Length: 391
Image 1 (spheres, helix red, strand yellow):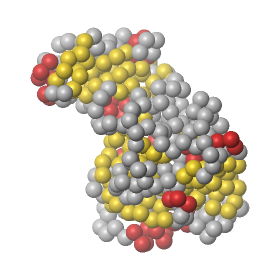
Image 2 (cartoon, rainbow, N blue to C red):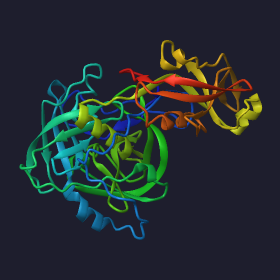
Image 3 (tube, helix red, strand yellow):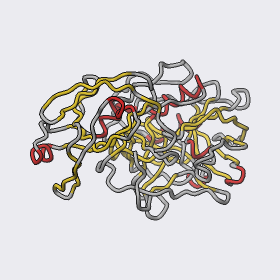
Image 4 (tube, helix red, strand yellow):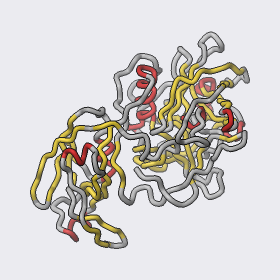
C-alpha cells in the first residue's frame, strides 16, 4: 500500500541519540482511497515455542490492577545501540521460556536512519521489572509488519512469559491495557478501549501497510513501541507501535500491530530466519451500493481494480485495471477494470478484504479470483509472487 502524505504519524519508540527520526508521515482517512493489494505472511503451524491461551472467555469485570500484577513481570524495557543511528529505547514482552521476546522492528534496527540499508542494533540490552539488565541477541525482524524478535538467555534472569491471544477476536468497545516504558518510565500501565479494528496502518518500516490494525484510546507514547496490548483477560492482542498525533505525544489515537500477524512473523523468523509475504500487484478501490448503482457495476460490494502493475502476478494472470476516472460524491472512482467479488470462494466486500482473504496464502500458491468484467462473471487463477522490498 502506498505511503500517505501529510504530517502526524509517530513511532512510539523513544530516540535517545542523534539521527533517529520519529515522525514518519501521516495518513488521511485510513478507510478510503486506492490501495496496492498485498498480503501478510502465512500463519505457520505452531512450533510450540510460544505461550498461547485457549478460547477467550467473556470479560465479566475488567480489573487493571490484577492484570498488571500478573503480566508486568513479563514486560521488558529494551535499549538498543544503533551505531551511527544513535540509540533507541522501546518495550517488549517475553513469549516463551526460551527467552524469546517480541518487540517492534524499528526498536532494534536502524531503519529510521537507513531505510535502504537496514541492519540490526550493534548491542541490545533488556531490563526487567526488577531493574535487572541483561544482554540480548537480535533474532530477526519483519519490516513489512514492523515486528522484531530478540532473545535473552533463560539462565540470565527468571522469565514470566505472557500468553498470546487472537486479534481476530477483538471487538470495538472491549477494554484493553498497555504496559511498557513510555519516555523510559518502566512498567507503566495505561488502560482504555478498542476504538476500531480492521485499520490499514503504515508499518513505519516499509512502503507497505499492515492490515487489520487495532486502534485504541489507551495512551501510548514514545518508548511504548514494542510493548504488549492486553485484552481484559490478560492476553496479548497486539504490539503497540505508533500514534496519530500533531504534537508527537498521545492524543487518544494509538495503533497496535495485530498479534495474529506478529505470531506469523515470529514463527517464520524462528523457523527460517526470514518472513515471506505474498504479492499480487494491483491497486483497488472500495465499491459501495451508491457507487454500484451510479455506474451500473453489477454488484453492490466489491473491490474495483484501479490499476495493475506491469510484470506482476496480477498482470501475468490477466486481471484488468481501470481505464477512466469519474467523480462521485467527492470521490474519484476508477472504472473500466475488473470488479473483484470473491477470492477462493470467499466474498470480497471491499479493498481491505482482498489483502485480508489472501493472508493465509504463500508466494507460489495459485488462487481463483472471481471478478465481474462488465456484466460477465469470470474466474481468474492468480499465482502469487513474493512481495518486493519496497511499495
